[in-house]
Structures are given as C-alpha cells and as structure tokens.
Length: 217
Image (tube, rainbow, N blue to C red):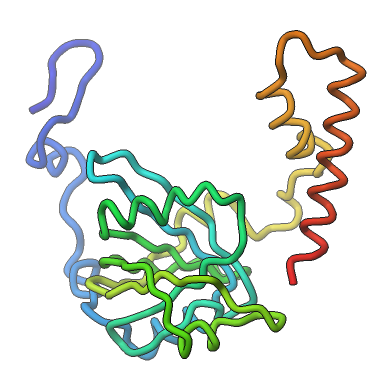
C-alpha cells in the first residue's frame, strides 16, 4: 500500500501497478525461453556484458565482462558460456554463483542503443573442449561460467538515448576524474602516510596499472 505520510513508500505490487500501469502485450510477448537467431546474433557481436549475481541472503553484485566481439560462447539455444578472464581475484561473482546460481546478464554492442537481457542459472565449469574455444591471444581461461537460459528478451533504447551513451560529444574528458590508482590510493591511505610517500605509491600504481592494461594478452 501507499503511505499517506509526506514520504510515500510503495510496498506492494498493486500499488506499484496503480502508479506505473501495465506492460503492453508486445512487452509481454517478447520474452523468450531460449536464445533465438536474433539473440544469438546479438551475443556474437557483443564485446561487453554485465553479470548480475547475488548471495543467498540477497546481497547483490554486478560485474563487467568484456573481450573481443563474440567472447561469450553460445553452445545451443539454452546454454551460453562466459570465460573468466584474469582480474583482481576478488571472485565476487564466482562465489555468489556457488552460493546462489541465479544470474542476470545484460549484453551491449557499442553504437547500438538496444540491449539484450538474459536470465537463468549458472555453474562454474572446467571443460577442456569449451575452454579451448574461449581462448584469446593463445591463452585460455582457467574456468568458465555456464549459464542455462530461462528468459531472454531485447530491451528498448530509451535509457541509452536519454544518457546519449554513445555520443562522443558527451564523453567526459578523462582528466576530469583522477586515475584509478589515485582514487583507490586516497580511499585506502593510512593517516600516518606523508603526502610525498602517498604520491610516490600512487605513481607506482599508475605504472603498474598501465602495464597490466598493455599486457592483457
């Protein structure tokens, strides 16, 4: 129900529907249980996706995954496989999948404002024949995330058009924000560290990050 106080909280579906309305028949019918040729073509052209996971207690995480277009392998209309490339070894998504297999994926193609959403369950696999197909630059991943598709549908462009995400005129000058090393260094800086020592560590971190980016493959 809707609270009558100055701050209104929506606490049930009926109140939500009364406010927002119902989806169109087309919006309902577009939902698929498997990956049709259009979904598979979209994934084959996508170099970037977002992987949403959650722990059993409901705490959520969204992790970016990217590589050359088609880096996600569609094994069949019900199954796709995501390589786990080297990263920071936090393993947030992978640990969540072990705890709760339900996942949500969002595929993007640069220059295309529409997106593809895929939901299902996931498991972590080590399969030599699959990992060989996921190799990039002569290196194959140590493991992969196999997703069993339960729901797939294309999503309209409204949010991307509002954001003008692919419009170069809207791109932020990179120097408007500090480097990653600077931001993380500031967030983790001990109170006793001097400014000179801090700047030296940040600069070393910037060099290390640049080298890591250069040696992706």
